[in-house]
Every structure is written in C-alpha cells, then in structure tokens.
Image (cartoon, rainbow, N blue to C red):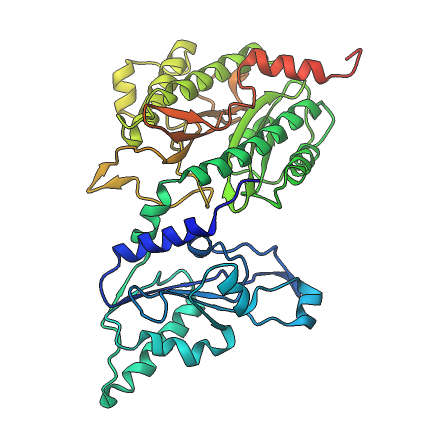
Length: 444
C-alpha cells in the first residue's frame, strides 16, 4: 500500500507555518474517543486535520506548531507507554516514538499538558485554533488563557487574538499531492472491486444487506478497515431516498438497486455510486432514465479542467438532465426557460459533486470572493448526477415512478483536464448487463 512519508508531513507543517503570523501558535487536538454504548467504543478514527499534519493515529493527543521556536517547532502531547493498557488496547508510540517515528521536535505526556501548554501560549500574540469543533477542548484552551491572564501583573502576556485555523489548513488540504492521489487511487480500486462483487451477487430474493455484506468483505480484503461513510444499498423506491441506509429491504425482480459506497484507505476516502437492475436487465423505462444520467456524468467530465470553474460541471449535468426529461415528456417547455426555473429540482435535487480527500465531503471553499473558484491540478472531487422519480410524484406517468438512478465517480483535476479514479467499475448499460449475465448461474 502507498503511504505518506514523514517528510511530506513535515512539508505540510512547514507550509502551514509559512502562512501563520509571526509570534503565533497553532493547536490541534486529536479526535476524542466515542462510546457506541455503555463501555463499547466506536472504532477510533483520527481527526483529519490532526492526521494531515502528523500521520499520528492515536487518541488523547494534542499537536502544537510554533513557528521559529528555537527549542522546536513541532510539539506533540501524547499518551505514555503503558504495558498493562497496551496489553488490552494495543501498542502506543509514547514520547520516544513521537520523536523517533513521527519526527516531533519535542514530545510530552498528555497528562502534563495543563502544566506545559500554558507556558507555550505565554507571549504569543495569535492563537490558530478551530473554535467550536471540540467543545470540551475549547474549555480547556480557555482555561489556559485565563490562567495566563491571571498572571498579567507579573508581566506575563496572554494571547491577544484567536484565529480560525481552518482557512489556512483547509486550503492546503484541497490540493492533493502525488502520494495522496496514489492512495486515493488505491481506495478507488478497492471500492471498484466491491461494487463489481455486489453487482455479480445481486439477484431477486436477496436482501439489501446481503449486498452490503459483499461490499464490506471486499473492503476488508482490500486492506480497508472501515467504509468512508455508511453504505447506501437502496433497491426499488428506496433509491429515491438520497441518504437511505436501512439496507433491509428484499431485492425484487424488475427493480433497480442503487449502491453508494466507498472504502477508506489510510484515512483517504473513495466514493462511488452505481445503479443496476436486480435481475441483470434494464427495463425500457429504467434504461431511458439511466442513459440520461450516464450522459450527464460523462458530459461533466468535459467541464473539469484548469479552464473551468467549480460549478461548470454541475451546470453541464443540469442541462443534460433537463434535455433528457424533455425528450421523455417528463418535463414540458423551453429548455432555456426550464434551466432558468430550475425545473430539474423535483428530479435532481443535489449538487453534481463535492470535494473528496481525508473526508468524504472534504474541506475547501467552493467560492472565492463570491465567485465559483477556478479548478487547479490536484483538486479531487466527485461527479454524481442523478434522477429520482418518487413513487408519489403524480406529475409523471405511473411507469416512471419509483425509479432512482445515480452514477458517481471520483475525479482528480490534471494539467490538461481530469483523470477518473473509478473507471474500473462498469457504468454503461451494455457493460453492466454483460457483467451480471456472466455471473448468473447456468440456467438462470
């Protein structure tokens, strides 16, 4: 598996420090441990900003960056080595590991943070910190600042300004390095094989959760510990529920099934949607809707390049979808008027995509100074047009109701266009039907 080198993490910290004001400090806490129920914890997943700057995946840690500090600019507070707890919970890096493995300049026990961190804050004019994301830790930070303020008569100077860290860090995260893209390509390949496996397994009489199990198996087999988000396996009318996650309905002959699922690999997300017929054959109505969505998906790719802005791909999908619905008679009117009126909204109610990276809905501004931002190489996003005709949409003939289709790919902007990371999953009608036919047992 590809990985991010410690030198790249160091470059990221250096890049952040170059954007910080003189005499400042940045503080990033690790994600807290979350209880699922009683004493059972959810699988731990590190805070994305913390991981982006360090690669350190343990809880109960705080990362501190202090530009031009002579004793060291990267300070890490972390758990102590503890043989008894490590017997139960796994190995810890400890302070020695934080320095040797993760290249911290200094490392201290997390139990000493209340004694040490206020001293690092003293005399700093500006504190970069994401207020509001970690309420409990917010209170701890404020207690440190108030402690320093209480020493003002002794000549101790408290920080005078708090600044959100997010804009500085998230702009950097928006542009992926070659190593990050390689990891995302691997995640996409694992997810692609999972989708193929689910298509091959599908047949009437199974349940949605059977296909989810196929996805989970392929994720694990491919080296992923967790899905990047809750998998959507939505058959029949459930495909018209955008974030459906019940995954407990029986697959019916003649229905479509929409799967929106992707694994996370080394904290980097993939995000793929494919829609296919349970019995392996599209009906005429299903095929007609599917072909419109596929055309929108492919047309969007022509509007992703350094020559384009973020919204260009979405606008391209809207035009294709309205044109298609007009041709089928599901919309009436003039094309340009319908586009201006957003006549697609009852059928296509979401955007064509989002940033993708350490978070499945990754960080980064979509507009700069009120204008859709221009795309630049290294930006990575999804392309996911869809058409959803609810069963209670009585404005369309009955044969169209209950059809939901979405086709989603992961795309990285290149110097002269874009590269699709998820092309391994079939998405044409002919490819899908051939794949599913080959998987059917003899005589079916």
